[in-house]
Length: 92
Image (cartoon, rainbow, N blue to C red; front, side, top):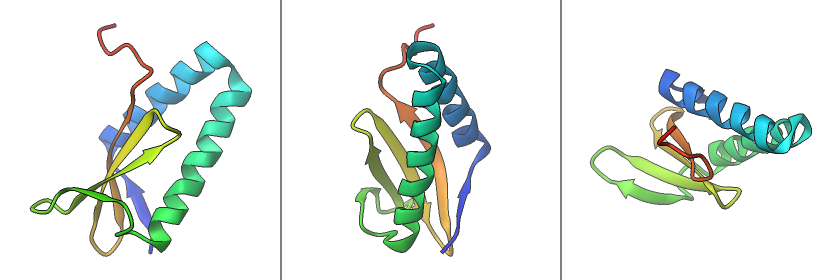
């Protein structure tokens, strides 16, 4: 099974990577991205192995690195809807 990241999720990921790079350095943000790709690979092998948030929308959530939540839908592929990192200050 393949995965796709929506434009909204891509923006969220970009913001997270920029934040991590600023706060923790390039090596940390690169490690995060590598782990992100790996966890999405795992989700493609067991797409229904994570918590259901909405049955109606077939929306699931995957907690990644304790502070990041990835919301995705399962169809013929994994569709990453949004990515949220709770370390960010969303009021800025």
